[in-house]
Image (cartoon, rainbow, N blue to C red; front, side, top):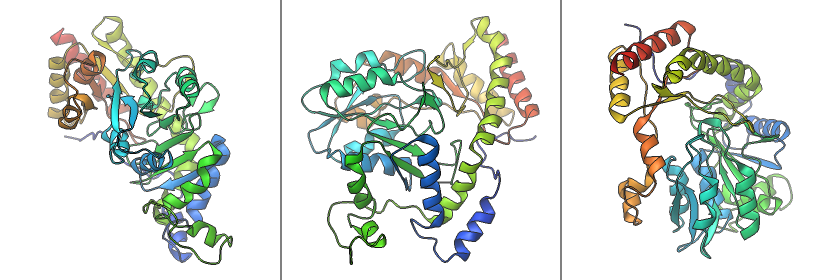
Length: 380
């Protein structure tokens, strides 16, 4: 039986050619030729003030925590429905995660619940853009301005998506991208820090270079470099940047392919939604998505788990997503308990992500949709 994985990385253009160029050029450590090319491309296309490639989106978030001087006893507001990195980056600095429930429509942080969570200990608001669909950033940014609290966008899934006329990651004071192999544009492992407030730029370069002013040295601004701040080694290899640059050059081509895959799922599964048997993703009018993933919400956890098993038995890998952070062992250590965030808990039990990657064929999608149709129709 042909296996259909949940994800499969792909080569779209000149990835291998650029990797060879990087090696032949004599520098495959951080901040080489292709790293600089990636910086320039992202800054120009997205209108970002400064972009720095990192080893992961996690690294970008950790840098954000350092730049915002997050310390022990501080509080950071974020959704419970997110990956552990969103919380870990700030917990590593000693902060307490202050979780907020999500809204039903987009599965993003409910902006109407944020303000009530703010205290004099709040030092950052960290919305994530789930599935490449934007939060209502006008509300989030208004709250940040009102209380003079920086907004750090976890745009791991949001590269090349927009909120109104702005690219995700470029709206808050800081943003973080992921180029993990499960994302739209990939380098295997990798990410980027997007700096939209100029006050953070100089220190970001220092933090990223192990707390040294090495970047100034390479630009000839100082005659030697030394340790000037805390930091770590957040630079990716230029081999990874070479692969990524080829992907970024083909951003619109990749997005067009993913749009086609997304719309096929949407068209073929809409009759099940019309019959009230499942729910499909919602895209608000303010959002221009990047078609990062396609998920369905089943009526119950039992149906979700049954469909996931049926697909697996047929050689198709579909997966659930986030387990709520507030009900995790770490969440409980911070004093959270089950029942506090009902939408998050409900969605987590019923959500199923379908296979989605650039080389997914229409015949594969037809197979997937047929099994879903048969299963849901029979069980309902």
